Each structure stands twice: as structure tokens, then as C-alpha cells.
Image (cartoon, rainbow, N blue to C red; front, top):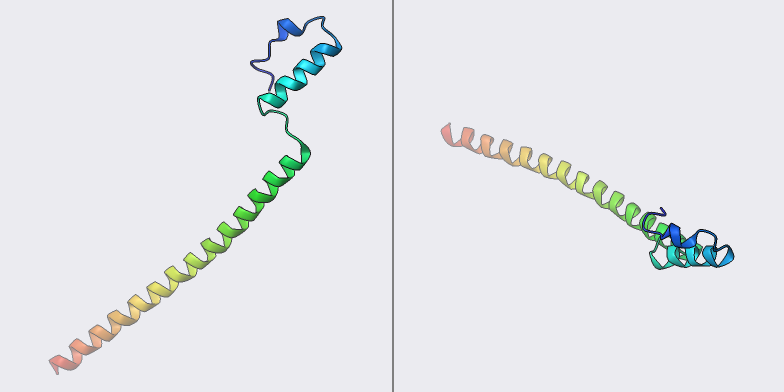
Length: 85
């Protein structure tokens, strides 16, 4: 997490070093406000829920398409049998 932080510069600096370190973490995006993190997590959960609903709908549609295909094939087969009689 602290890669890229100029540690040699901060040695022996004390309070100023801590302030610089925190500033560095904020500017590089490694330290974010709690509200920002909560918003990102809420967005993630919302998208996950939407994706799960969509996946369930697609699964149902695929099943319905398989049933429809089987029905149409049986109708076609029966029509050929009637024609050949």
C-alpha cells in the first residue's frame, strides 16, 4: 500500500511526515473518505443484484426457447407424418 511513498524523505520528520504521508495516500487514491467507500459498495451491490436478476431472466428465456424449439420440431415431424399418409 505504501509503495511509491518517499519513505527516506519522511524519516525523522515526525508530525509533518505523518501529514505528508496521509496527504500522499489521499492524492494517490489509496485513502478515501468513508462516505465514498460506502457509495462505491452500494453501487457494487446494486449492480450485482441487477446482474443476478438479469441472469435469472436469461436462464428462463433459454429454457423457454428450448421448449419452443422442441414443440416446433414435434409439430414439423407430425406434419411430415400426416403428409406421407
